[in-house]
Image (cartoon, rainbow, N blue to C red; front, side):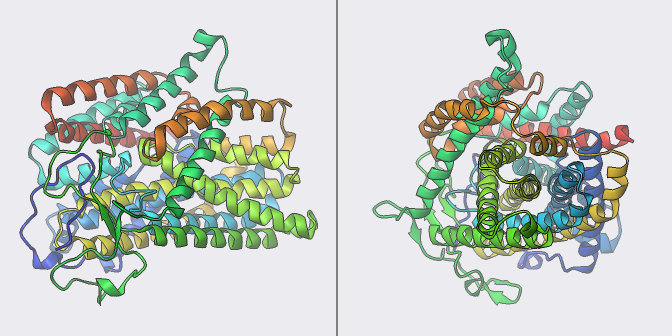
Length: 589
């Protein structure tokens, strides 16, 4: 029998008795479920574009989708009874979350860049190019989630929050009470502008990564008082991110080229018992290049402490290094094709020579791939993704190497479309991974569930494209433009106002690289320090550091049992903050 991985620091609940009705994972093709996913995706897309255009924020609506699905499942109608399945609820939260981030962060923001730049004729080509980038972005994450580079065992805090919400709603009892209490606190915090989701993340993520995140938040908030200067200006955090990002990229390459010898992961299919079918075919016939590899962990991926002896404490990688290499190579090839198509429909051959056009395509593809990886690594550890900062880095590099303004505007739109969906799908797959961890046999069910989540996300993406295509003109004509799109366009138009920007970035890249190198691949300390420096959120620093201190002390008092309790509290705080953010659409009207 294939053993499932341990869901992070949380010991899995006892395996339920086999249920014949749950032998196969629910499918998005079920008529009622498909209609529900479409409706939820419309809701998520509208919430997403309204908030990002009017308030400049993005809401994580996955918890909202999970709650709606749970409520539907408790309506006393026979046709709705199937929605009590936690796996159908997981598909619902995957669809609405995908639609929200796709519409707001990928499509509307990208389309706004050429519009603000004064080239309304390029909005439709940009929308097509950003949608291609979005699809490739999600595919790369789907194929690489569960690898050593992006392990399912990592924090992915919003995903853990969504899973705990669904579990608590399904089981009730003390879990539901603790989660509900945390949710109320998180929701109330939004009315007082307290980012309690930051404290929630600190209960869930890697201690060292979040410590550096908190330090970065503190340096940004209190820098003017401590050093007489705002460290968020002058491209200081961008320089730290450049150095940390280059080392993180090198660490990722090391994972890709490494060959396991003594003590390494064994490559091959995890054994299982019983005849499990997914979509009518045996598991062995599907995704044959995704053979799982297993290796006992030396430390807990969240706390860097030795894990407690648990029945299923093996760290299982469902994607081996060979598959990961192929995925990233194919991803680069697909990004290259998408950039070439964008150059074609955007008419860039009139602005650039043939060698310049080829260079633009290759640079855009590389920037898109690196952008999604760095954003994904940060999101995996902290629940925040520094998409704006990393995109701005490539924008600055484009200015330095002399890319003309119109091609640069399209490049920025294309790159910014990747990353957010990559991170968001990581959250959703983490939630599904936790919810499926007790199923027997685990491996074929996990693969089938992951595939259905990807299909649910595709539904969300398609709906998001339709909503943005219908509404962008109305929003833009009212000057409802995502703020980051204005920054991108203004930077392209005016160039580098600070001639020493490149020198500053290179100087600050050195400490960023050293800290990232010191922390290693698991902790992502340099990337997290840079992420904190880029965020100016009052009180977030104290909330993160206080939550980390509580976590360390409480774990010493309660032992491993503290992790489960803190997971629920952290999930509740994140859920409440997400609900509060989503509710701001009412205030924005």
